[in-house]
Image 1: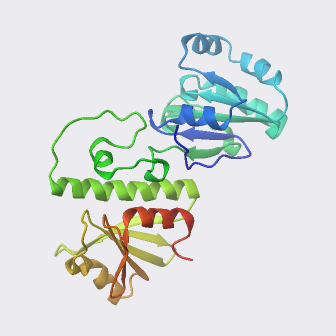
Image 2 (image 1 turned 90 degrees about the horizontal axis):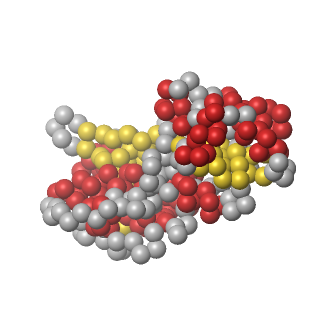
Amino acid sequence: MYKRLIETSKKSFFLFGPRGTGKSTCLKSLFKNALYIDLLKSRNFLKYQQHPSILQEEVKSQKLDSWIIINEIQKIPELLDEVHSLIFKFGQQYKFVLSGPSTRKINRNSGNLLAGRALNKKMFPLSILEIEDFSLEPILRFGQLPLSVNVEEAMGKIELGQLFETFFINELRLIKSYKNYGYKFSYWRTSSGTEVDLLIERGKRVIGIEIKYSQNWKESYNKGLTTLKKSHAIEKAYGIFIGDIPRKQASISIFPYQLFLKKFSEKDLFS
């Protein structure tokens, strides 16, 4: 069992995320006493598809302040009307978690997204901050779903470098979402090929990050960051690598990726 970073809410919420990210397992762990309705089970699907109003009767039989979890809510969008009615009538005396893969499938079926009466949260694959016995290369090879399938496949250093960059930026996106950081992500590249892998922006403030799958940090890695720093386009510059000890080269702070992710999860980079 993994201890997930996602924070719960005191009011009803949607939980969206691809299949296999661990939504059901996480919710069962967080809400042990909840009424759990799994629409993947055929008997539940048929019951609520034929008689959606049964949900209201079952919810009203629960104690006030109870949580009700409906897994795969997109399979029966009509249930969202019943949930909407219950929230309208009882407020947050009954609280709902409505999980599914995405809002797209609900919208496709003209589903009711509850007009702002429920928060939207996202579940991502596992972060390295959630994995106790973490090893980088298997993660780059096989991904971060809790039930990843191992595939034996040789990879070159260039491919691992590209995967590491994608992996690291996805980790930042995950933490950004869970922590509700109001950041915008982009990158910078000139026509001559000078680039910076990631720009993190908040308003007019910008931080530059260069990401390298390397145990060592070469001065040549600093080219793009140095260009932006000298032009005052960024206020801070970071290098990310797979070494063990932080370094400092001129105005560029170089961090082991795990240490930077921990820093990112604990503190606003612009503070």
